[in-house]
Amino acid sequence: MKTAITELFGIQHPIIQGGMHYVGFAELAAAVSNAGGLGIITGLTQKTPELLAKEIARCRDMTDKPFGVNLTFLPSFTAPPYPEYIAAIREGGVKIVETAGRSPEQYMPALKAAGIKVIHKCTSVRHSLKAEKIGCDAVSVDGFECGGHPGEDDIPNMILLPRAADELKIPFVASGGMADGRSLAASLAMGADGINMGTRFVATKEAPVHDNVKRALVEATELDTRLVMRALRNTERVLKNKGVDQLLEIEREKGASIKIQDIHEQVAGVYPKVMVDGEMDAGAWSCGMVVGLIHDIPTVQELIDRVMTEAEQIIRTRLTGFLDGVVAEAPARAVA
Ligand SMILES: Cc1cc2nc3c(=O)[nH]c(=O)nc-3n(C[C@H](O)[C@H](O)[C@H](O)COP(=O)(O)O)c2cc1C
Image (cartoon, rainbow, N blue to C red; front, side):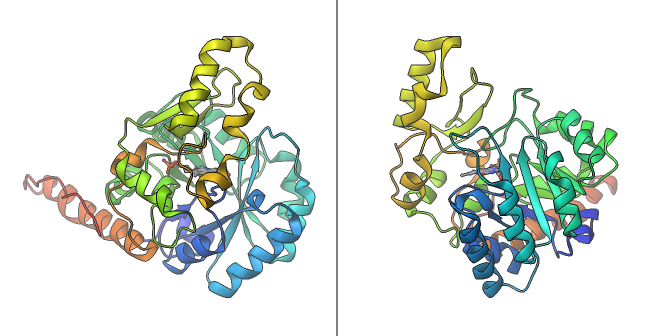
């Protein structure tokens, strides 16, 4: 399948693995790129620019296909040295950067001077248009369903994607709630040029996270995510657990007067506890509603092949069948 995104990034399939804190290590990024998608290393999971340089080198040892690095600009307890991270990306020869959070405007000259293509993740049409204006090559349009930070507008992808398609000139991928061939076919129908998946890629054999995390994703349903940090205007969609219940209780007690320090225990330093140690009740970690569509732990290759085969069948058989007067059944649930 060829789309504006496969052509822009030089990849086989229009499937991107979004940056994920403590998940987007070289192993996962390389597996996604080797399977024909675009793997992304999560820049800030590497505590220093030197460590990011090593992670990029490790990824290059595992794949000769294109891969990218995510740079997230979110409020944090201590601001990372972004220019040095960008230097590590440039010197590592990485040609694709996924930015997220605040606008990457101030870093665009450095990224463009290094010949880097930038795909910015946005949760609204206005931010997508801003990204287009400041010279981003593509956007990842992230609906309210998404794992992580959905912004504060609460617009789901059935509305957000066609709105983005109406306004944008640069290519975009649909992000949030994407799991299978149905997601890809539907996104293409709504004007996107591919999909970005986060949560679905965590439940794969190659994702370098504790087995408890993968098991929790298979067991959870679409009813098991919660929104936290709304009052701080830093909303995050996370998987419900005991730490998240405590966090929500504190949020209820403090109301609008809540400060980030009040929930420090439930949000800071949680990722290594969950992803490395498998402590599933440690606190807030990102997870999308798409968890309700995750029933197995395939290899990345199996997952990507399945998405592509299913999307092709839907487009060639189910959809054209309707036009030819064949009332097709819905595709069966796919598991490895
Ligand atoms: C465990 C986890 C960690 C994430 N960490 C980041 C991150 O550090 N930076 C970022 O830009 N997005 C992050 N995301 C968001 C993903 O890149 C992606 O945009 C999102 O998961 C898409 O929604 P989905 O989970 O429904 O596929 C994270 C998502 C998950 C599930």
